[in-house]
Length: 171
Image 1: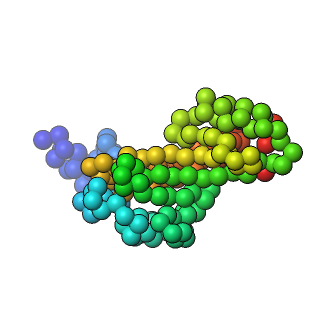
Image 2: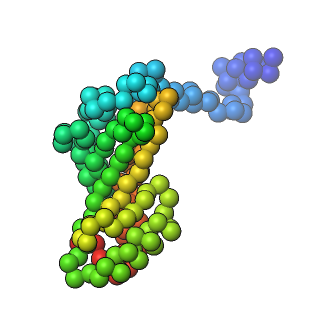
């Protein structure tokens, strides 16, 4: 009844409207990862599936034997499927400066492992720092989780090096 009264007052030049008009509700677009086809089932984990996924999300990559080398904003990441253990393995390498000492390299790997989650660091050769992350895909994974984990892994590794490499050991 009061709304009708307000409308009548406005139409004859009465009191100004007490409640300003409401803007229409914003309609959010559907999430880009919300369909059944965006879930990769355990038996679908193969190189061809990852190739199709990375192409769809516009990640550059190269095929290298039974793995992919994916270019992210933060690093080049080798992605491999370990079908026996049902894990998706992500790895990246960083080269140590030639002048750095072996003990300092080990201290850096220990500092990184003590301060970061998601990434495991190790000194594999005298001149390389190895970073890896394993993602269990038993029973399947959402495509979003794979892409997000790949990007997050590369970002955490790079930022961890920026924060922890106080002796400037990485080339």
